[in-house]
Image (cartoon, rainbow over all chains, first blue to last red; front, side, top):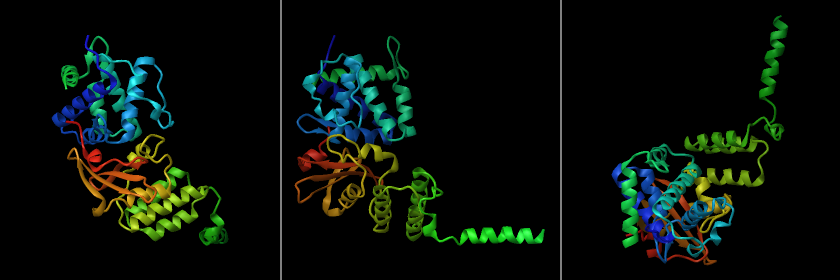
Length: 144
Length: 169
């Protein structure tokens, strides 16, 4: 089973979200992606969002979420995380976007996207095609 | 009967003549959310003097809250780019690259960074990026879309222009 470190998994999340934003012409998702966009050695556009991602990865792996706005997330690093399989990375991606959605007062455009992305283990995503799109993004990030 | 009506009318009229200063601290001006909504409506309709007047009447505001509202009115008067209200909790938070507190000073630093001189370029073709260096060496950065501030903060270690603009390949 392919696993990616948290940095590659974040790149997979960005591939997936950019593709989804382009296909759905969703302006709010484009804004989110532009802020989130990550470049190794540079960081995410909004510096905090890399740490928001790491907090979500940690939550998927340990069940414990370091609270938002606590000042503690900045202490996280990629080295503290275990590699993620495709399902773990997808759940982290969903929760990462969902947390932002809550923080910015639940814009309807992102509600629609989250509804389509919702994942049920053993069943897949609410919009079935999104799971294959995710797997493609995950594989692409692993090869990049 | 007529006398009673006159008395009632007089009471209403006099209630409207109570000096405004006497209304301070009565709690009658509403919750913080109500005050904020009212001030925002007045700002949106360019009634700045009215907004200030309303602010002076508002009860139970801390000095910090008062200063923040005053800055909002002043920023609107000066034609500065406004914050998207929904993005406020994303912009002001205890996380790397951000101002921890939503204060008048932090708002002023972010909003006054948005000038043509400080324009860096477009990020991902979606966000207009602005930055400036303060005398302290701190970098203020701002993302704007469709005339509102969507994100912004402070980098204690400044990023290069490329770092501010470069998106994933």
